[in-house]
Figure 1 (cartoon, rainbow, N blue to C red):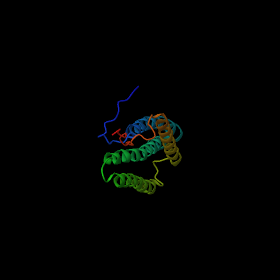
Figure 2: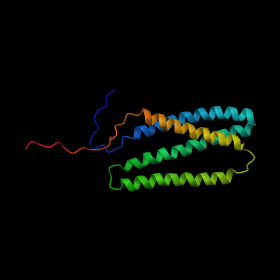
Figure 3: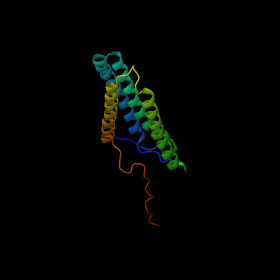
Figure 4: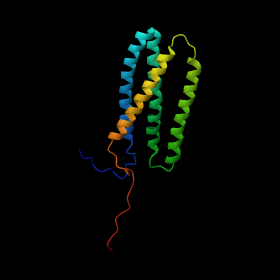
Length: 159
């Protein structure tokens, strides 16, 4: 499979397809974790286990999605004068958002009767491990050159 050379005016980073692929595969893995975790949660902890597994998987997916989506959003500024500042501001803002949401959820969900903490913890861990495996596999199988976005100077002329 050959790819056509990129248009020099196209400043979209070549990492975008990799990030999109990681998000898509992460969503598929999360669906599987939700089904399996929901079944095990229902069998071992009843309705509370089912709700805990689904909520834990949802949290893992949302946190994974915030990172990928923030990088894709920040990449829209590629080629502009504010790219570096916008990129780091958006990505760090996404991380800060995840931190705040996590702390708020821990405070709100601590001690509620309708959650099983063990199933919730296991579902979150399964989602995080699944996300890491997907990220490693997608990046390892991507075919990006090491200097994909670099522009070489023009060749010397014989004048």
